[in-house]
Length: 336
Image (cartoon, rainbow, N blue to C red; front, side):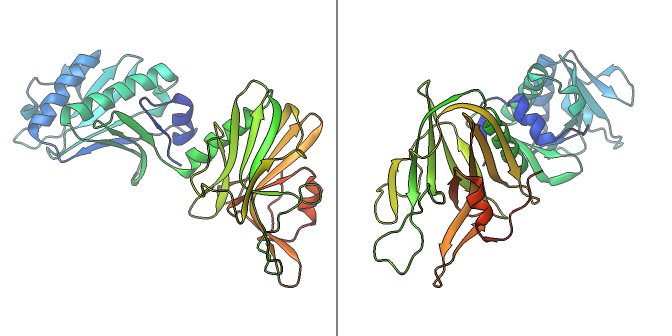
């Protein structure tokens, strides 16, 4: 649930920080005065200017990092103006940590984000320590982390993950579906010795993974992810085998799903639950609809089939009315 990239992606970053203007914080812990010195030098190599503010506004920052920590205890801010322009404010309040912030209003495109990422990378490399970015006023809520050991940025948050999934599912519009396949999971049916599978013609497919193959040769896979609250739908970029079972026997079987529609994806929309997980998706394909739900079917001893909303399987309905007829626990939330 945590995207990793060598460089930060602007779209994902904006999803992570949200629409409001904020001042996220950055920190490197366990630093020394030598680290501060290297950070000053790295800042000068990247910046248009490196000045002290507000004391002596416009005055260049000292060459020696020791001068940032005067004996009289006067606090200063080091304003690092990067191209873009993007301003990063360093706060030399303690030698043992390097703290800074920046304004999300200045991160307006991929280029300005690259400038910020370049600064973060330079600070981490100078200290040979990770840099952690946190949301404004919430040091316990990480936004991103850069680790110089493997040159990787990592964005955090279920919100980011879900928003990225929404974009991925909506981007299916315009593609042409050639076929479907699934790793199906049997119903929990104690009355039968052999595994019992749901009939997609009568009800739905209950799948560990549901593959979509496109006419251009590409593919994607619907699976589920687990959050702190429930399970939700996840769209993976290719149809590589899922991590769980490796032998499709017993309660699993792998087969083509011929009951699902082929052709142009004319529409795609999602339902995000009130607590934030992506539970349902609707795809309009060549005049037909496919409804996908993160859920689970259970056959009670009485013979009644019930469904759990927000569970670990992918339920695929070619007739959404079949989903309406099922009893759900908890109740499904309403599409708006």
